[in-house]
Amino acid sequence: MDTDPNWMNDVVFDENGLIPAIAQDADNGQILMVAWMNREALAETAATGRAVYWSRSRQRLWRKGEESGHTQAVHDLRLDCDGDVILLKVHQEGGIACHTGRASCFFRRLEGPAGSASWVTVDPVLKDPEHIYK
Figure 1 (cartoon, rainbow, N blue to C red):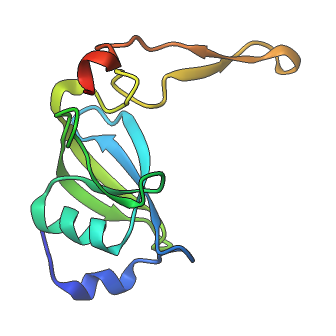
Figure 2 (cartoon, rainbow, N blue to C red):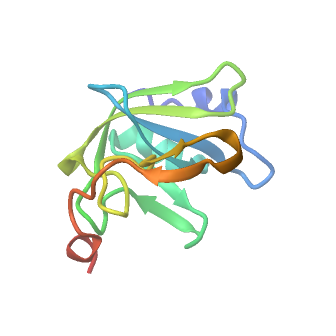
């Protein structure tokens, strides 16, 4: 991947120095998760080919899979037309992207008529999070 710092000039970070990053399965197109990147996370991701995000809750770099082993190998990095969203096409190690032990963080679907709709869990837990995180 290109690590020339000039490409970073096209990236539009928000007032907090962050940009949303969508992780998509490179093989089947499934959206796995949405996270945030700062300049350092994006640069490291481009340089290493491994997904690195900015954890807003921990206020530090989050190298995906550092605790769980469920890393993301980046096959393609894309920038949207406005320059304010990153798309990472990844290979998800272990098939689990979500901290709930599911393949994707988008495991709830809105079902039912508009006045009484509710979120329904539609994707199974592949591995108990208690066995993933120590």
